[in-house]
Length: 90
Length: 265
Image (cartoon, rainbow over all chains, first blue to last red; front, side, top):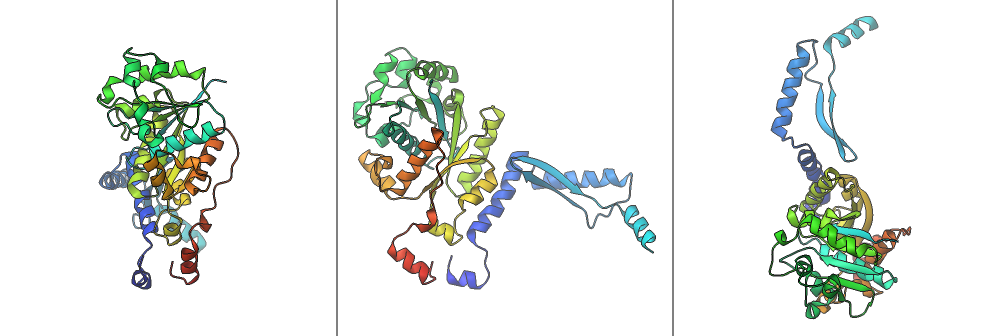
């Protein structure tokens, strides 16, 4: 990598390669495309919303890897609970 | 003790499977083990030229399988190491001339008399690859620190797990320590982090590999070559020895070291 690229804060190509591979390998291993993952998220939101109110803005759903196995990790804050907690704090 | 049957495969072509088989075979045989290597790349044979044995071929693996010769007749003895043999691939046939059960039968006949059987797999994940892993006790997956090779290695490791051949052990080949230092090449740790398998060797890029293949004398014969040393270490690890990984940080000549001092590299 040249001097100017470094000067202007361009990322190291090795970091670039690693980040791209991390995403590609998740998709290769799970057979899930980013579009399929998005539609899975939408379905999850719709299903859970039928039962409880959730905070869609601050939720996180994604595939993480643990060694060679993949897991779908969802962190979905419930709105009702946080409101209740806020009330108790008062 | 019956032979350990080890297959070297990669998914992607051109990452160094044949070179690795030749060098690990030479290293094992130099230590006194009785070794047979089998070229599993039918139609594109190359292990013979890398070992410098191309002029001695009379029969090949398909001749054995189809009964035109006895197994011993197709085994070519190495010029320097009398306990190293090659079973060459057929050059004028295709992968379908051999089946996984043919491979199992052939290797069963070798197990009793040798310490190691090394199989050079063709690139890809089709019939030739399936043949190459059919009889393996252990599979070594070789890759380069480069996006397409790592991706293909991951696919192969996934298939090995699905076929219950174990996750395999990883050889990272052609690592360039200067590029790694400049963060312009994935490091061995990066590759391990991505693939999450056991590491069995890191081989630095070394021009002696090309010189060795030009001459038909694998670098494992060369006591001064860094790549040769890395392959000899892999051979020792296959025999169960604990060998530390090479410190690749201190490679490079005086010029590179000066450049590094000057902050140019």
